[in-house]
Length: 390
Ligand SMILES: *Cc1c(COP(=O)(O)O)cnc(C)c1O
Image 1 (cartoon, rainbow, N blue to C red):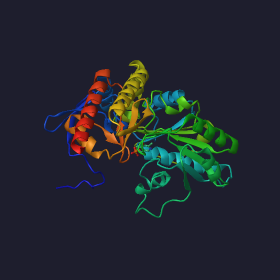
Image 2 (cartoon, helix red, strand yellow):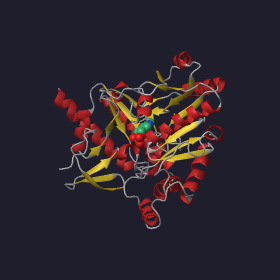
Image 3 (cartoon, protein in one colour):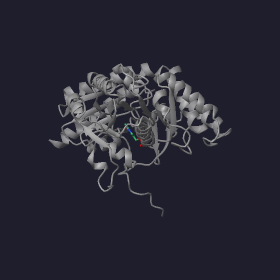
Image 4 (cartoon, rainbow, N blue to C red):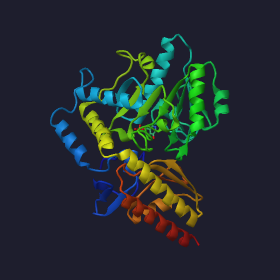
């Protein structure tokens, strides 16, 4: 039998089909999906408009490489630059690749200015991907163990501590790389005042601000990009997870000035921005707009976090509920793995963000009824788990 390398501790569940916010396993059991393929299935499963657009594109052209102009890629570039306020985009296939592209662009930008600035400061508990560059950028020791030698030029500071950042900046510093809301690292919010201070510091010192919105972007936090809620604009922005609604695509956007350092031959991707992936992303952006999904994210996000806060009053084991839009974390006094297993047995799929945090990532078009159902299941799981513990 062929072995798939054992890099994931998988749930004991085989999913074979989905529709909207529901998925089914190979025994026909139904689950409410509050994982969305880790913040990927923006429109839920088998969305008719996405399915139709992909079928049509698959019958026209899947791939032709970036040796040629690609109309759908140009359309997507127009959309993403208009939405973000940044001038140019590079397309790739994943979040880690988008961050790798950002790091390369930063280095090349300062190289082109005859500056020796090369290093990137990131936050502790951050997550930026599994490539050698991006796991080094990641502010968590566990992803680095065994992979040395790691590339030079990365430094970590605690999130929301502007003084620590100021202390860490030196003549080698080129950029600050942050998630506006840390997903994998525990659903930790970068405070608005902090983000604004970081923006101001970067402006003052001529450093670049990279925001990793691989998880927070494309409506997940209730605005197209989470940075909008802080009233700042980054120099470089990375996107992936929710952008293709389930089709692999990543994007790295930058200002015109910065992106000028990526000329022919400096960077590339065979698959990046292929017609199929760009069709998926264009459809996701269309549906977010036409179905009013940003306001749905805001309303359902409020409903979910208020509901979890109610549960926190009933069950003090919930220490804190935090997040933005439909990226919500509930930090518990206990390990969450048994609760996740119990919720699964009751038909709800939820994820963790570190050992003590439950993470809720429903599709952006989740209904009020589905949110209520999820809350009911979480409540009953807490009840039975606590009883069992007594
Ligand atoms: C998931 C994630 C990544 C890595 O994305 P991949 O597509 O798995 O490479 C990078 N940054 C953040 C913030 C993420 O959540």
